[in-house]
Image: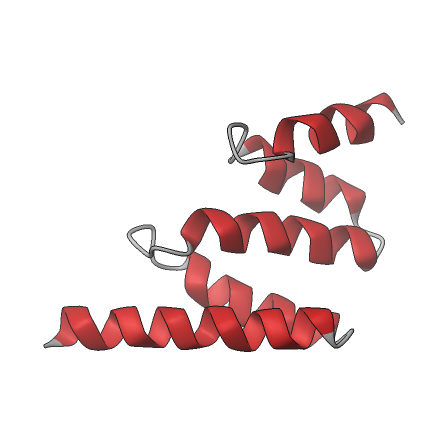
Length: 88
């Protein structure tokens, strides 16, 4: 079904993003993470938001990171990082 194939695609995109992120390919990772975030129902949506925030930080875009972190305040580490960025 479309639902199950979308889930596989979200999962695949997420793990491709993680491989790119960990390999230092931040732009490719960001592109894949955006695909995952396009589906609010994705199992990986919140985690993808976190890593997209980190990717923005690595790319020097702290304002975009702040906006993303505001969307996931209860995610592990997000509120602490958000507070740190906003104090700068």
